[in-house]
Image (cartoon, rainbow, N blue to C red; front, side):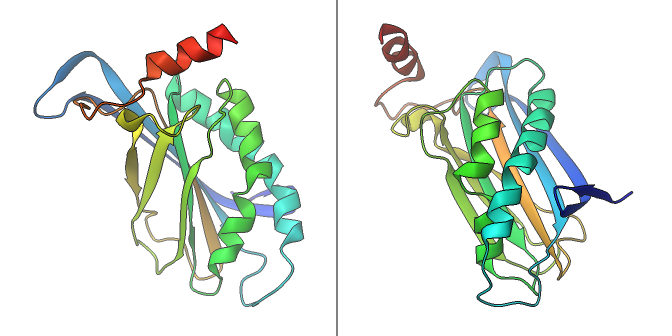
Length: 197
């Protein structure tokens, strides 16, 4: 069923959840949860080039609100420690169509639902044929220099995006890499700094 939402037509919603118990070297008692939400939209700018993108930016907070609710459901009570976003644009669109839908205006409603997020959100967009995978980079939600949380998710949209579609992707994880050991600032230190303010 097609859904109209703030003048943007949502054609499909996809969800991905991965619980990582072991990485080959380390096994944990509680798994690292990674989740991704994908909204596949009809691209109202398909077939245009250089058009004003203000309408996409203005419509994006409502998408962020809805995507945030879905993401919280997928995390199922797990703390969100890291995040990332991205977009796949069908061949009749341009990369900027995804960028316009993924600005801070889109992301702030998600930040509000996952308990904040002071760090910028890693992001990647590209124009693709259907079924093309994308690697969404992720970083710690409050401090980008927490090296243990440099990670990502690989996402592909089955049979999409079509030429006249944009797939928006938001990923989150409940922690860093299981066997992270390259040093640097830790999640616990970031939490302590925030508590001391």
